[in-house]
Length: 255
Length: 246
Image 1: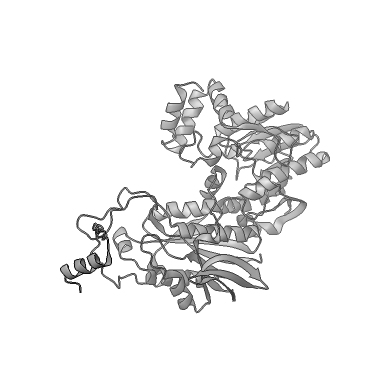
Image 2: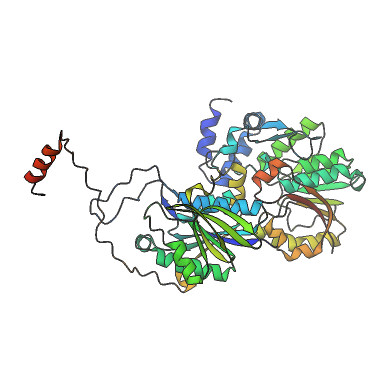
């Protein structure tokens, strides 16, 4: 078997279409009974790995998810999209609430080493915390090059040529393998799992591990002080002239 | 579809797997209702590697193709798909009739029954399509009728058992599960020693590619898989028929 062995991170998040509600005690958002699905950027990462397998650039794909029991549904989706096997790193629901990218990246880097992965592909950020840290931290822990916000990935003489979305436009870089990549929106459009693939996915291996199996301590390094709704937008005022604006500003004591 | 039937089935699909199957068995003393369900959810197609054989399959044109699995009226309908390992095996059987003429053939995990039907068309004397799913056996009977062949069916769990009476045993796309690969590793040497010719059809599934069992397999036939297989099989593009030796 030649091709890359790819590790893909899949986070289970509240579905993008759900209206998120803050808990009355302001400790977090309501997750009980709320629809969850795979982080959309991670779906794009899985899709890219599967396409690389179809192009014979990759020979095996392993999906990893950290969190409570329900993460296995997320992993089954990844398996149904074409991933070969899955690793569920299980945590208690309470521990998961305080889990941070630093913990996940430590786990991913340990798994990447153990599984002898050639590539780690994760979504650029999760839609619940918008951290945009896991890919970068994982690369640093592994001392691997990173190509983040990827919108195109091509093989180039044993290395990878990656087009990145940056503020100024598009930048193309060459990265040596092994490397960490993070997927951006325009990288691809993920496939829907069809019934035959959902059925096949049930037979693919899914193992459960604990963070301690990888020597990772998931004690929180941060404490969430409060979670609140964004402030309700105040009504504005329209003024007819510059003189009126200056008057209003003086009245408000701002000039 | 008979109105009273569907709601019962949908309630049944949320009940434990085996209970649903037992329910099917009891209702199918008149199997016409089951057949009607199969006809409703599948289409008769020749769009695969063995167009000589018509089969009732769930295709992209059927609504169940995009079902989530929980809302399908059948539990794990493996029989409703013509898996690529089975396709390449059936193609081989139709192309090499001399190997199967007048022989007795057991197709283990027969699914849609295509490989069993192919061996009948190639002149096999006695053929048995074996599958532990009773719905599969009904689908196989319907597929036999479509193709004007008759063969026996059986729902016994045969993997690991003594079945040295057969000339030929087929394993069409059975290596999707590494547990199965281990079971076969125990069973196939015993079968082979009792004189059975074992043919395996596989599209390159990892549990087989990586398994020590592979050392005992000799490649007899290799064929590129058609477009509709590629789309559903993320990277596997060649089907191989192997003969077990040893």
